[in-house]
Length: 372
Image (cartoon, rainbow, N blue to C red; front, top):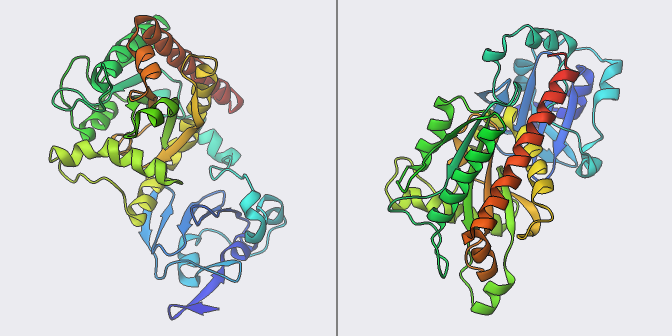
């Protein structure tokens, strides 16, 4: 086949022929090819590919046609030049199902590395390991907003004050557990969104937790109904609601003239960003699961499924597993009252601290299975 005046190959067939595993993500319209040496991520209609963490230009954007994904033959050979162009019996075993049935597949893009790669990693000194692969020691707490930015307003409180109070209690609880804890702010000051992630990177954090309160502009009756907590990770939003929440949290950057500020990311920006942060995504989800377990049974219940994803600018630059936690709705009188109470703040902080501790244990257990 040919498209865009170039010869094209079926991406899945090419993967099988070259002993690579193939993973298709229909919602994001992206796919990943993984060999022992290389990991390449593509997206339909995007003229870039992520190869081993870096971004390269493609001669033509991948195309989805007749249930098949096509990439330029020139691009395929360029990216997988180390792979012999021969069929492999392991390919059929490692490859995921065809595109037509892949919507139900749950293959993880971060395939288990080959034994040779594992030996190389185990030989690396812990201090040189990246966040998400090493032991969890340094936690960065980011109380949202602050100073001239009050955040969302409740009937009796301001978001900036509630998240700071809970952030301080969380730090206290984590220090007791032996963690090294840093806070992007420990008083009522304004810090730009981009600077918060920069601080986390400077501190070489292992986990970044940005604390916020949700809000809805609605009738009093509607405000009574909308309540609950939500944990967000950095990923392309799948609902208009998630987009709206991200725009609200990002608005502060544009409101106060932060350099390169924007309320939403373009599809190309998303692709480049996801490629760069791929290594941290699974650990962000792992921590999110621990958060849900820890928060279950608390006074503030889950809102909907309790998990979402969107382009929160405060998470964009954090080179580590990261989440944005909307603790509750400040626009709901019951949620607000609990977040304002001393008992409520302590309970919320203790539950987050429990999630951090169980996440640390999970990472440690995983490292042990790899012999680290």
